Image (tube, rainbow, N blue to C red; front, side, top):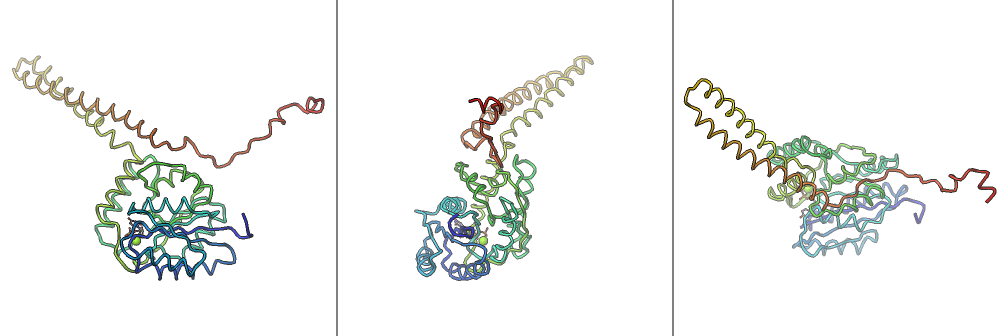
Length: 327
Ligand code: UDP
Ligand code: MG
């Protein structure tokens, strides 16, 4: 660490935020000023291929404030990609990601940093339910997190946001995850380490409109669902169970009809064959799904494990003391 104070990087993706950025930067600067005696800060803005004057505004801000760096992506790659670009360029001992629209209040920064200094590697924020948001957004968001909690192999916290702090260790680990479809809040949970949760009250978007259209939200939800759960692949396997059970029922009914010579055996035989056939096809699809799931895990190439701590003692210690002296 050069300089006595730890360096903290603040990463803010911005897409068409020309109206918000000047005021956001002013408020952020004010919040950071109050922490100046404890930390050094660098701010990294990522222009996610905006079509408006976002990049010009960022250049002006950077011109006036030497702690500001900016990246500009060649086109709009989406929030999660822009966030990743910013995180890759961050040089801090800790890095904080936050939205540039003032919904993530800069006042919370001090709390995130306190927990980091208490030894937490990841400090996530949990958004309080905001009744100013449209009901459809609130409903779909709760439904999504509920579903993820039921089927995800990684615990995804309800209402987790992309406002969070990571230590250099956690960031380095996150950057080892090279998957294309990035659901960063899930990836951070996957890392493990010591995680602290901080609740916060989101503010209203300062200006402009939400860039997460319904379609984009669906895509993000899909990335979360398919990257963190194999449950969808198992659906055919479960369905095949249902069909095989129905086949068994018809087999029993056919047997009973045969014993009673009641003459309706043909119908049950027919149903038995149909259900058995469908059950076999779905079962094979389910088995295929298991292989596809494994291939999917393999191509993601996530690390097999991550270390929290490690102390490898020098091998010299394995030689008994007498022999060490003799040598
Ligand atoms: N954003 C981005 N690229 C996109 C969409 C959004 O960098 O394609 C940024 C946006 O500028 C903001 C943050 O991601 O800083 C969150 O987006 P937004 O506020 O529109 O989403 P919401 O808060 O409504 O979920
Ligand atoms: Mg927002």
